[in-house]
Image 1: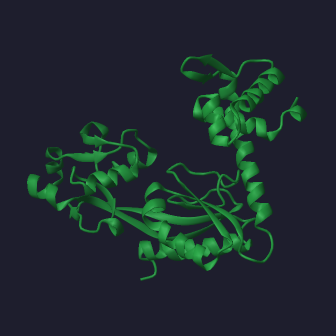
Image 2: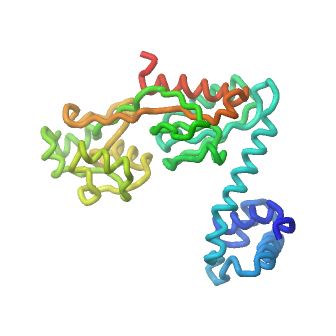
Image 3: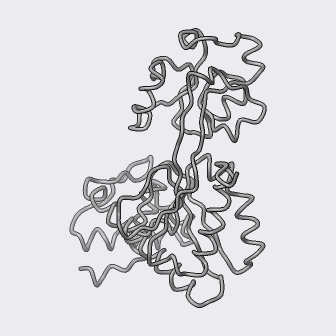
Length: 295
């Protein structure tokens, strides 16, 4: 069975899962809808079970399709890593480097550095994954990652680049309308901007900031970028990186301050790659400047 199903079939399978229809998958992959349909039909025939339930609203995955998804995603990541490795050999700085970073770091901090890096190395191609999910470097979901937690695997090389400082901030227009809190208890009378779903980091942070609970938030979103935009728009008080605060006003600075130790991480097999080394070094310098580690 495995020899009759090529990678392109699994690629179509993942596209249908993502797009929810054969037509959407075909558009995403640049193929015809009949070709996408043949790929799915061949997989269903080979596995002896339906992978999608057809309806007027599109295609819904069966339990079998859901069970296969993780394996297909691993194949996709491995194929992408193989392509990056194959195009990045040699001494020149060329080929593709895939970088993973949090939403805020990836959007607010890295783009100018990436532009300069590309200008210095025209043959370099850069992929930026902005996600708060920890990408698996061992599975080569990314080549280099900016993380706020140190790696536990021995095969990963990590360079600490300083501490990202955070605090409570609000726009001056909001504080002009609602007043400046002078004590932690005052926060209960303000519009707070926070998360929708709790994470282990937020549970740990709440030990310092007990009021920071889901029920206390007037605005809820799990997107750090959306929270930052809400703070900048004057919607209320939220957590912001100090280096990105700009004209925002720090609230209760003596009572509340948070630190996120920051690392640049790469798999040891890639550290000697010219393209990865150049990107790694540029990331280190960029994040050291952001955290103030350079002084």
